[in-house]
Picture (cartoon, rainbow, N blue to C red):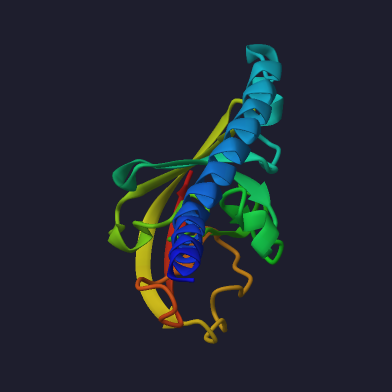
Length: 187
C-alpha cells in the first residue's frame, strides 16, 4: 500500500512540475507561429507603398518591443484567458496602434510566457515600440502605477492623445493588484 501511495505522490508531483513547462511551451510555439505571420506581412510591404502604409493603423498581429526589459513579443487580438495564453493581447476597448486614442495591451506576468513579468521595472522615459508591415511606432513611458484590480475607472477611458496602456498583474500573483504603464506616442 505504501509503495502505491509513493508512486501516486511521485506522479502527482511530476504533473505539477510539468504544468508550467507545458504552459510556457504552448506560448513559445504560439509566438513562433505568430512571428511567421508578422514576417509575411513585413515581406509584403515594399518601399513603393511605404507612404501609403504609414497612414493606416497597425492591426494585430504586430510586434511589441520593450528593450529595457527584454520584451519582444507578438501581440494578438483579444484579452480573454484563451487569447492571453498565446501572448500579449490587444484589448478591444482601446484602438489599434497608429490611431488617435488609447492602445491597450495586456499580458501575463507569471504564466504562458510571462510576457510582462518585468513591466513593474519600467520608468518614465523608457521606450516601447510597435511594428508590423514596415511600420514602426515609438512610445515614451509617462507613468507607472499599481492599482487594485477593481479600479478600472481611468484605464479604459477614451483619450484624444495617441496613448499606449500596458496592463499586467502586480507581483506577487494573486495580490489583487495591477501594474499599469502609460506611454505617449512619439510623432
